[in-house]
Every structure is written in structure tokens, then in C-alpha cells.
Image 1 (cartoon, rainbow, N blue to C red):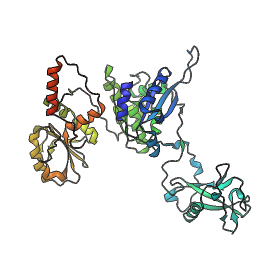
Image 2 (cartoon, one colour; image 1 turned 90 degrees about the vertical axis):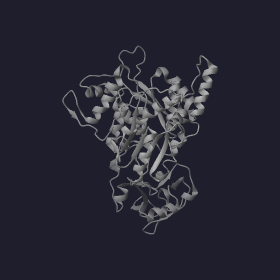
Image 3 (cartoon, helix red, strand yellow; image 1 turned 30 degrees about the vertical axis):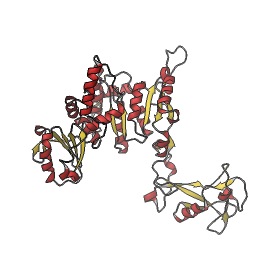
Image 4 (tube, rainbow, N blue to C red; image 1 turned 180 degrees about the horizontal axis):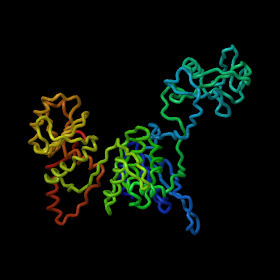
Length: 480
């Protein structure tokens, strides 16, 4: 677990969040490990999930919960950038029932009192406001200045701003002694009390999760797989949706994918709120789980499926699903390994650029026949050049093209040079990156240093130094 979490930390963005599900047996050890790796200051919360309603076979105490601990890469940055969402479902929409001339831009509103007591007193907030009838209103309905602990929530300058911009309103009140009026402020649906767009209204999400229970995961998989449960005790869809709903995120990585509930939850959330979240699942293929369960489940979610009771579930069609197998390439930078890594990198580049539509021709040039591949979707273009002999033909083709956005060009090079000199005549039309140098540099940041297990250390170490000198990638080349 320590090794995997160290790698996970390197993969996290600066405002990244990690969620780890664990039972009571290893909770204490995992918490200590995460405190060490991520820092105690970056601990966010421990979610307590009620995974079942009871346990009749318990001999002492029925344990019906499971823990999910949450850490940030940098908690302060996460708070500054406000990545935590509000529970909109907790919002009382019935309160927003009043409308004014600003309804199109601000939404509906409700009124709240502008004075408050029992909090930190400030004499600068204890002043009089002139009402429409000429009377003077003080906090707590007073007609004059008294320090009774009550103050206005807003300063004098903000009161003027609020009156000028329709955020304040005088309403009749029998409790106000200095006037027939009191003053209240409007809480709008769409903008806050600074006039800025309000993203969400609602309470913070709770760390207590009462539903769904674990059995729902089996029922959901049974519906997807014709009454069969191909994976024991998968996490229920509702649990993942709840956890993911607490965070604003663009990409999620689940490297213990299981039956693929995380991806299912991401697609469901996108369908519900129009989001563009992306999800990457990783798992081994032990007993065919990846091919037969993880991939197949989400394929059916996208295409649609029929439950055992005959009910048809419409697919989440606005999604793309890609399935890739990983393999090993020797890490020594020999010409053979470099060529192979270049060939095998195409799928990773498609993921990186989010570009998957492949074409057989680039201009008048056929693709694989000349040692390159071409991807385009109408907005973006990408060339992956495996054979240097194709470069000059590609340059000639690019010269006569009208290019709105630079063509992304990944080109094989034994070093860091991305053939910049050769592409100079079309430099404004391309974005060059040398491969596999950029890939080696990316791996260098996450892979541990190789261990030497040499049978003949003197001879093999000399050969290794020669190879490293020939293919030295310490300097980054092109863009990653």
C-alpha cells in the first residue's frame, strides 16, 4: 500500500484529492501511513458509510460501517480554490419565492434580517439608517444609539451600495421604534450579496453516509448482467456518486477499479448536470475481470441494457469508452526499446490530447504505409511520426495547408531534437515534440530508479554508460 500511495501522490495535481476505502482492521495503520505521506495538515475527513443495516451473526458488537478517508495534496490550495461543493439537495428552494425587476439576472429571493446580536461587537456597525418616512432605524429596532450588543451586518458604505443596487428593501414593522419601517436584505438564487455570481447554495456535505447499503451494488450488477452478479460486493453506485459530488474535479483515476462503479458514477453525474468529467480506470485482468466485468459493465451503461424484469434502461450515449492493455518495455534506452516505446505510445498520446478519430490520409499521403498516423476531429489535428523518412513529405503537405490551430506533431528522434530545423518552414503551423524523450522524462518523475543486479558489474556498467551517453534524455525536448 505504501508504494502505491507514493505513486498516487505523484499523480495527484496540486489541488488533487484522494479517497481510500478501508475497514476497521487496517484503518489506524492507513491513517498513520497517509499522515506520513500526505502530511497531517492535509487530512480532510473520514467518511463513515453505513454499508448494512444490521448483523445478526455478531458475537459482540455489530460493525455496520466502513470508513473512507480523504486527503488533499495541498489542503490550503484546495480551500483557496474552493474545490469543495455544496449539497444543493439540502437547499430549501421554497424560500426563494419573491421576485423583483432583477429576476432574469439574479433569480428569485427571500428576505433576511440585517441586524444581529450576540456576536463580536463593533461600534462602527452600530449606526442609524434613515427610513422612507424620515425616521431613523438602529439595530434591534432601537431609535437611538445604545451599546446593547446588536449591530448591522453591513457597513455604511455597503448599505449605500445595497440601496443603490436593489439589494436592500424597507418593510413595514411594528417593532421598529424610530420608524414604521425596518430594513432587510435580499438573498438571491443566482448572485451573492456582493453582486457576484453564486455558484451553489446549500450546506456542506456530511461525512456520515447512511445510504445506499452495500447490497445495492450486487443488485445493480445483477440488473446489468442478466441476473448474474459477476463480482462480489461491488461498491454501490449511489456511494460513489455521493463522494464524487462533494468535489469539483475534471479527471478521476481509480486504480482499484473492480467492477467499474467509479466510471459508471462519473458518467451518471455528467448526464445529470451536463459536466465534462473524465475517468480513468486501472485494474489487473485476473480471471478476466477487466474484459468481462469492468469494460463490459460500462459498455452496457453507454449503449443501454435490459434488466431481468424486462425494463429497458436507456444508455448514456454521450460518452466514449476506450480499453487499453499495458505491457512492459525495457527501460534501457537502446534503439530497439526506443522504437518499441514510440510505437506503443500512440494510445497514450490519444488520451493526452483527447483525440481518437483516425484517418487513412493526410493530404495526399497515406498514413501507416509511410510510417505515420493521423488523427483529427475537426477542431484538433495530431500526427505521430514513427519513420523519419516521412518527415519531408509531411512538411510539403503542411506547407500548402490552411491551418487554423497548430498541428500537434509527435516525431521519433533518438535525442531531444524534434526535427525543428526541418520543420522551420512550417514552424507556425505545428507544435513539435520529440519522442520517446518526452515519455522517458515523464516516466522519470514517477518511476523508481533501477536497481543494479549485474553478474559482471565492470563490463555491463561500462556498456550501460555508453548507452546512456548515446541516448541522454536528462534535458527535456519539445512539449510533454
